[in-house]
Length: 627
Image (cartoon, rainbow, N blue to C red; front, side):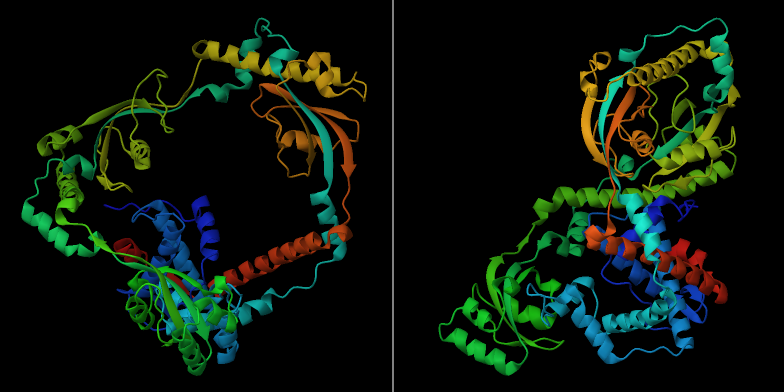
């Protein structure tokens, strides 16, 4: 009951993160396949069990990748739920592909795996060559061992042989791609002018009965939504934290338990020269010891200055075999040749040392107190949730239960489902938690809602005291608003008609900005557009673009602006057809894009087939308990 999982994974957030995850370092395989019981099995795909540990590992990697991009995934948030669902489905799809590949006898050779590793740009130095020294460092930053990476890559390549086979599609007809290319890339140049409605037409007043007819034709626009008033209790951990007393001993214990948090490790900026053999590395080391400079030795080894720059690292960011010799060096000193655990030899030089530091207990005191207070407040909040829930189940009203527990009850008066108040002049403050409005409109009148923990970690319960049902308003209630809307619509219509009439009388040579009737225009521009180009002229939108692509050179078209407060007037000047042969690169890119879309559609259909051919079950209970 504490964690709500009401949000679906088919939302736009899920689609965004499908793209983000697809761009991550590698599509992780499911690793070793083994059977597990329902207590630790997150999902089953055919004969493969995906364990909780496998899912947790893949999920942690994705959250870390997003964190590096500045996107924090808060536990229990909608984002976390969507990301978990996406990662789990990736693992399921990978398991299905692996089984399908095995059923077809598809295997992958060790040399193929080695070639794929060597071809991966992530492991290349500045010269574009595979760097055996960089390889383990990249894996270390990803938290992977060589064995884990190679196994995952082998699974990926095996499945790729299968997917490549069914993604194979016949070449697209040149005529089809050329037609699409010409349609998308045709350019039209136009003169665009934006004129306010009130510069083109006068305000109008309705005839008797006209407002009533307008109201009848737009009656749904004036429907009063359902409004609800309620008492509610909303308690956040920080609301309790200030009242929590923390003794010195607890602060000391927290400081000692989290000592690494207060330590900033030493960092070193490192250069390297890579060698294929120990002999070559030893020879270079001897040169360095006989007054040869680092850059000269690197150049003789065929490495540019950029290629020698490894970066800045703390000890825990490197493999031990590499970290220990680097952090044993003095400033500008050279290491003896170091054997990479993945092949090759390196000589390292430390070019800068950033000393580490430790924040003292006294320096950390305020942050310690805040952390401990929030932790204890969070624990207290869980107790409060249970205590409040028990009282409400026993029959107390929300006010009675809150009074017993010393909680503040707040009220909200006549709020609709979008968070708007019935009184536009109201100063009601709507809680920022999205669950508030959900609970307000899910609750039964005069019955406290179940106590929930919001995504932000707050305690929330709502008791609806009044419901004003949605209804059709009478004309008399909204007459002023109807008049305002009618006048705005009528002004826009009259301005459109006036602009079209003026346009019909214009000489083709006179610039639109010089037309006296258009004086005082809001914006003017000359633009070259494709069908998908949003005009830069302020106030113009794709509606005027569509009109221009239906026009002939010299035609003047008129469309209301998107906000309805102005008219966009445009004269089509030229049409520039495109020749696919004149830009072969762009044409080939479109051909590849269309072909890629076709292959992806086939791949999606194959995934759907596999999910029908193999039984797929997801342990939702386990996911709700552990994530």
